[in-house]
Length: 69
Image 1 (cartoon, one colour):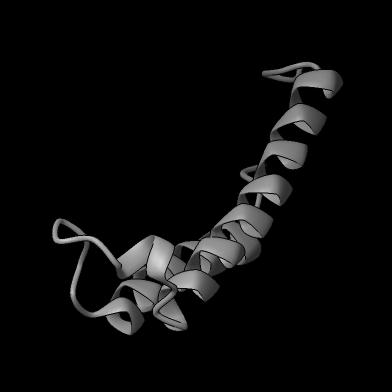
Image 2 (cartoon, rainbow, N blue to C red):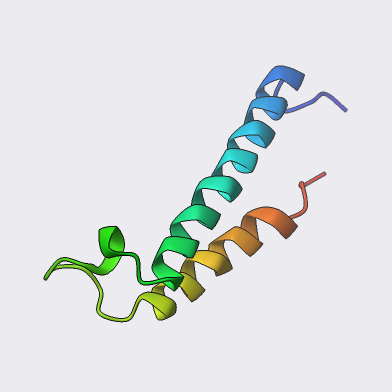
């Protein structure tokens, strides 16, 4: 069976996913701790830990998804 994408494209997707896990984890941690840069403005969400739960759910999706074969 012929591959749908090249090996380089597949590895690029893996690298992007790893960076997404790291970046989303940092953002979730900032929301969880109610950091002023994330919840300090009038237009920011009032409940940082609730937002952190959603962000950490996205991290779990990135971390445990299985490749389609």
